[in-house]
Image 1 (cartoon, rainbow over the protein chains, first blue to last red):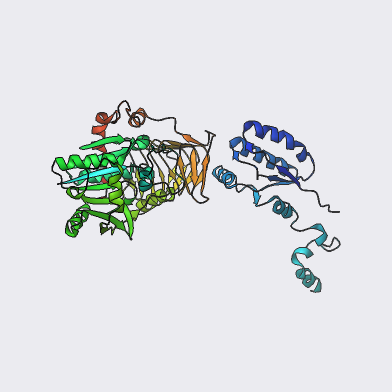
Image 2: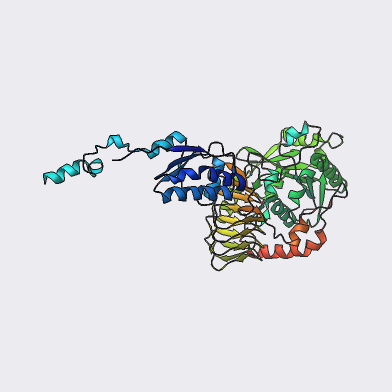
Length: 135
Length: 369
């Protein structure tokens, strides 16, 4: 049976420098111990970010992916976006305007919307499945 | 006889007249709003600033006298490293008062007309034609226009100006407010109001849309390099592009889409510079992607997003530590007296002549201002 796991939203601190990045990483470490963690990092408060901050973000993403989960960024300021682009990591993260949008993206196809007794391809091919059965 | 006065001065010349206080020092970081003007004209573009190019052009025109007056807030900017041959250079608190004094001296030495240029826009026009037009229109002042927009360039009959007043503001007020004859520029004009205009000037020059030519030699079609540029064999330079003197491009780097790396800068291993300008003496770190941007020291201005970042992490971007002693000397001013001259003016006279000759040899035609 498929279960809709919760999405955790975590607020990033205002400064992401070596010390704050390390303490933040220790703080969120337990979140990655669950199976398929779904995490949104809210960047709305971030005012400055450096190379260590970006490394920390990459480490968090790596941890989430190790456990079949995902990590998404929300409300990235233009300044932070420029830095992510500069360090060529902007393409690695899914980014959303708000945390709500990021959460919704995890649930793009709610489990309830797909009949659990139907064949797996019916949600994608629908009519095609019917046609194949007919032929 | 014709003289010229070049002013590197306050951004808003007219509004500064109303203020009796000394203007605030101009920040050395990249201006992000419409406050470019003289500040941007002092930034090196493809090896030489607009100010230096204007002075070169005046020297080539064999004028009887040239004076450069710089607001003292611009001292570091003007001290980019060029000496003035056959010209006097003064750092003054009030450039307009200084200009009035210079005009008086011109009159005493028999010079009838003078060109007055407040360096802000880059404009290509025929100086002789402008002076001829001034003579034909028989006005005391002729102002240069581009598409009905007034530029801060005038031709004046010195005898017709009232220079007796002790109020420094008078000359600027006269030039800006007095109805004058018009001379319309037909050539290329870049107003240099925003750093975006600086990028446009680079792109237009590298794309042959204006007469501004990069310094150095065209080592292969569209790739310009100055002496001392060090490009690793494993780096790729896609034309058109420019690499300034003493700059270093590391292995696996890509410089592309009308990018320029000005003098004494370094682009480190694997970094991509695309549609960007790395201004002089800047370091860009390993494995970065600089796109649609201007980098100066630790400041990155992203033109696409309109965001200026001051990056504290020196492994990313910073002022280049490996400054040559020459660059250090030429950017230093002897400010012991009220009227400062470059410390190393004599030392660099020969070098300047050599660079001019090299530049003349490599240029495709006359660059006009």
